[in-house]
Image (cartoon, rainbow, N blue to C red; front, side, top):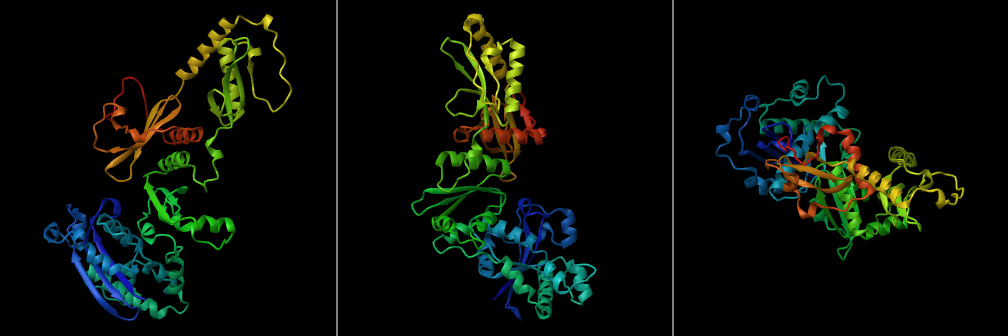
Length: 458
């Protein structure tokens, strides 16, 4: 078992918007050092002054250094098939995963964090920052806040942790964090390409057909969860045995992943996506014309064959809209029916006492025009899949019309400028409800649409 003990210096605190300026890797077999690698890295951007002051790495020092793209083959070779160790491991790991992915390398590794291990193996320390911890333990750090200086101190700390680990905490931690073994028929390269970002994943069978679509805040972790656990039911085994290829779509936000999942399920109706009733509303305000040519308005349970004016989650909401229309437009109550849990037969209509059909229908048409006029149209602007883009959701006349992404720097004069043909979609009640709920939670992300609208705030 070999370890890659790593430290990096960067231009900032998060991987998505910053770059590596220096990297050090020490290969260790658990008892002694096997190999060392160190290099400055040209980040392709200016290093902030406060970072220069902290690390001592200046813009002049990295000007002629290799880029990460140039170093990537060497770094990948050193890290591949080794356990990744660092102090506050997720920081270093996230940067290197991101940089390697940008360079075309799909790399993942089991991780060990010397901060967490120290808390368990060497408890009751006043601080677990690398500097304070090493000072308290008598570990010398040469060149603090430089990659090799901090990496060598982490090596000494790791060796101490290995010696004092009487309860096999390191081994137990590795068992918990090591990648789950994939079924042998699943392409491992597919899995290694999965990002730890929000989006949708697709399982294909041996013939390439999509058999399951799922959404996830962390695609890679969610896919892994399908292959973990001890359940060995025939249904689960049949599901797993049918998976031969894994694909994914990054979406940037959870709402975009939900909408993408819905669209793909409606498009492909995958075998293992059973929970499809959520796509249907529960109640509707419908209209129909009876044998005497009267337009009737009825609140009923959802029927996909009926001509619906509007859909609802609860009958109360539908009944309220119908009551409002009846009062405002003086609709005859004998031609309108509320939803009721009672199943009493509706009384026969005495047509001789009704207003003329033409007069009544004119009022109904006015009422329906009001419903249409009151419908919502807006565009919802949110973060994209990266810092260079934004996502949009276009809602027109109470229906989801399109959703997708556009360049953050794009000058927009009309929402039609950002809509691609593939962005347009056939919405359903569930998708509409998702967008409306999100709109209510985040009104600051919503721009109401009108005939003359400024898009400068985009």
